[in-house]
Image 1 (tube, one colour):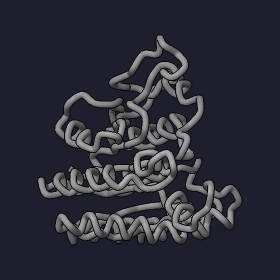
Image 2 (cartoon, rainbow, N blue to C red):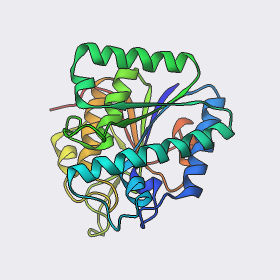
Image 3 (cartoon, rainbow, N blue to C red):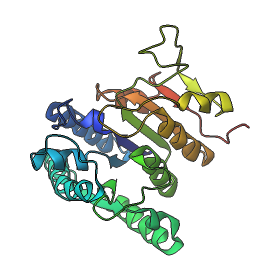
Image 4 (cartoon, rainbow, N blue to C red):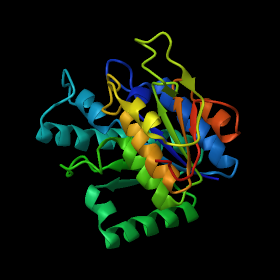
Length: 258
């Protein structure tokens, strides 16, 4: 099975913005084990700006574009160092792919991206994809790596897209403020009612909320790719998802209903 795993900033980092080493180690070990079992793994990882801000000693996440790009330039090195070290301990080689919106929108550049991605998978490498925040000023489609992961899944012709975040999945309301909010374990059709559930605030660390996750679900499922939103605080959740045990919210890969 070809699987795209997206890890959000809230999963990678503590509330302080510093990397959560124990969780990242567990995630890398779990993905390495899935790869050992014969699955192809593509990782879409957030966290470059946050890690760069920490490395530079900034008191908070930068808000202006040049500072964000500078933090991303520092943080991307740190992020890949961590992945190279941890995956290397389990015998896997990682490869970095940085994308801009133009790489997806332009036919020739998109073909080059796909060719590189497929060849890396043939070589047995584990691609780590992120938006090229050091040069991009226009975020891909609507921004956030939720959307990027769905775009990657479609171009990679993946079987499954997994979004790991700090939420358990999709609810009929914000469970933090609505005690009667109902958890949805499966979504078979992206109806207008389902899409309307994407309102509200995102993570305190990342930029994405449920809106970007539902947008990713539209992109993935319209291409016939199943998608699951799950809480990444327990890295072994990846086993549950891949082995078909009920976990998080599953979106069936089919055309949405209007």
